[in-house]
Length: 271
Image (cartoon, rainbow, N blue to C red; front, side, top):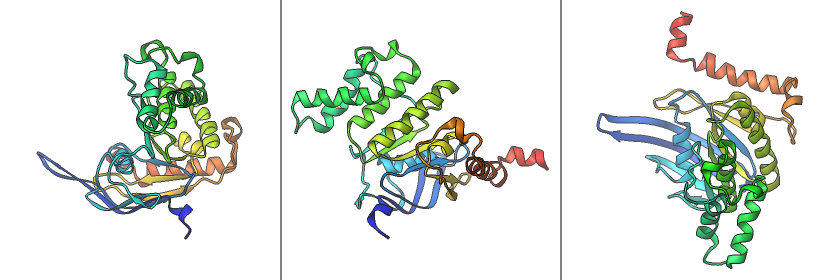
């Protein structure tokens, strides 16, 4: 197996939280490789450890057991090669869009590049997400979708090897979410980013992914199955709506989530 097939390596990862009420086994025996330039989504019911797994890759949590590598280096903490976009945009409200992105750029490149180059990087990142016109606005002056685009710009400005996204569009209305999904497809195609993204949205997963990693219910959640999405890129959501392969992948995910991993309440009703 060549190195490109193992850009991110997760081997036998476990995550146990110790709380005042005892231990909680969140994840067990997680084994996953992500290729360079691949778009992988993590999907499953609430409480299945999707965000926990993402935080392990980000280095925001340390696995109780197992090994996590990125580009053949152990993930021992956060690093600029792994940028995170959260569901909450997490922008600093007293800074403009430009300043929010510049802060990240300066942190990563400030010691080795001139201020002119840092400004160039900041402006390029905002242009990439179509927000040049809003660079001097503060977060309260722009829409929710624009805030998320600033968050994506901030992450991309660091030129990360891996873009980690935790339901970045989950709080947005359907039309804004669809627009940002389409924009993300274009950005990823242009930057050739490696992406791991948490989602609850089956259609979003099929539209964006190369692979959909489906998690079993917690506690002690693990990878239940993986769907390989072999749809050509670029992808058009309108054309895909009637594509037999798209429908097949969507059905496979729904089958896993609502039949093989049904909520206990749903299982009682069925009985």
